[in-house]
Image: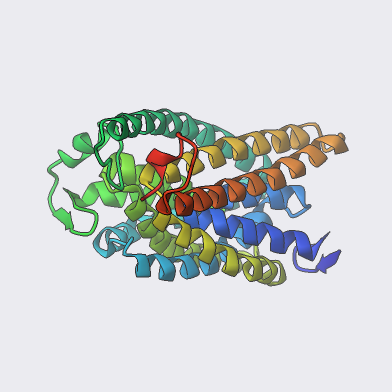
Length: 354
């Protein structure tokens, strides 16, 4: 156990490094900071809600930079789209941090964070899972017809609706192959930035679906572009939380030391899979994180008088991270087998790139 003086708690170093490593893999693969998994976990580890948000936001900024550099090499970043979102992201983060400070002073930060996490994540899980299953079935159909489904396929009709909004100026995002109003992009940045500042997350768990289903970018471009935003929102959020005294740098350093390696592995794995595979992992991460956050919420509401609830919450958090990492590694393994012409399960074939 290590004594984190600023946070006023004791926690095992190995556990923090393990969390950083596993969330690094998941974050690099689906383009999220992973705060929706880590912030609730830190609360269970004993960190106050506001301190958990600040620590995770700072850790996200460092991990996001590593993942961004790797995705830049893979050609998964649309800089026009990313930089257009920055203004909205910064505004949203500021509003989110101020809202968190309000609930901190009211003494309800931990409960409000968990309730908000459960509602938002479960809603996103439902939509992403339903749409991704439709896309998967469509890809299977194309495969049986001997047609190449390509690297990306999604069945949502929302992108056409938002791309039809003709509020000037209109932005042409060449890498993402999208033409859309600047205000749509800024609004996406503002909403996700607010959640980033308030929940202490990078905002990717809502920004990646928003870029795919609202803006119309491919999943790979959404992942890489979102990581650029995470660097900005994470950096600014880390600064604001530091000013408010919400950051214990020792905890941040231990988490980043694990995340640096995981982020590289997760980013490289995206080159072997199609868009729906990434969205599947994103949706599974959301539902598992929702279950974990719900257990933590029950634990907090019960006055923290049931230690077994805390134990289950920790087990769910660690189990979630291990499951997602194994799922990503399995996709990578089957993708390599498929490239060599070896047997892979039928459900995997439409999800990996030959």
